[in-house]
Image (cartoon, rainbow, N blue to C red; front, side, top):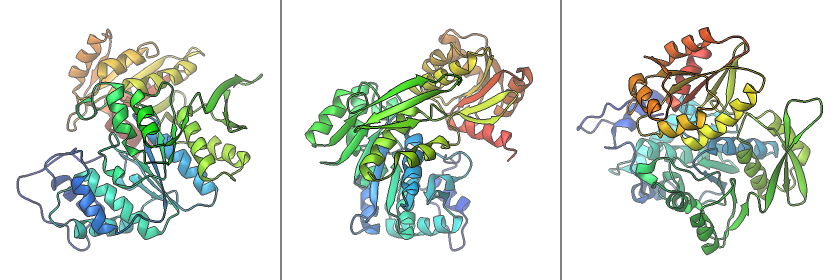
Length: 436
């Protein structure tokens, strides 16, 4: 996540030799007048100065409203299991910016990151780049410097006009299309689907990971002769309940093979799409290896359990679609009689009412926290917006720490506490629980 803005009208001086990552990030935050400025014209100029031709690595691009980080993690882990050298680019981060750029499964070092920042700065000249655009190009530079086989790239916002889309994909995954970032992407699934499908390229393979794809996605896929694999048509998921076990088994059927997938903690549709993609990229990777790798896969902040007695989960679900998935996971836990205590903090431009409606059937007690960040809602405003969704019993706290402490104190050892909403909310909760 970018640090809080402290821009001034005066152009800042570029960090000099020996500058730290934090100094570079403060500089990135200050050099462009807006945080989000969709469009490829500026970033393409700098990209072409950095790369005279497309890098030799395979490019796997992951776009979608929700589930992108899980798909990236699954593709990355499976490629590495097949002996491939990988780079993975995701956003935003939870604790450290370095989390966004992984080289062979490890967060990039400060030294390598600064070297990449310096290369982008030298190439951009007087071209103004946003924080995200600058960081995206730096990730590309870092991956090129590491001479990797595969780059797995998560789109930041939308697809067609996102900085990641300057790189032509060799395979694309669209995880889902739903309503989010309305001011930038539109207020209906057809328009948003058009933006997401902008990452497709003529003739490439692609996977759509959810039910009911928008017509705009299917039309763009057909127009570009994309080899699109659709969930429910080209591959299927079936949940089975085994005797003597409380945990369901999810079986993926694709191209005459069956693969056992974990029912959690990651969205199984995203994981399934990653497996379908791997079947195209690495067809010789055995089913047993795939199942072994996925059985231990997790992503920080995605239904992540960090404590027991009571169980404490963290999840970055911040729109109604993601909240619906989170509600399903919590519903499974409530079947044993657990009471759910929810610590929730949100940004002003999110559909708080939709999130509250999606979670209302599983949350027993609400702990509403203010966020002291740009666009962060106060606890009082958050409570008022939940009231508009019919939830009137939320307790208001000044900080995540106060809300989490109150929730844990009120919970019995068999209850569940979930910290969810904005990445800022989850990052702070994670920091507290890990003692960082």
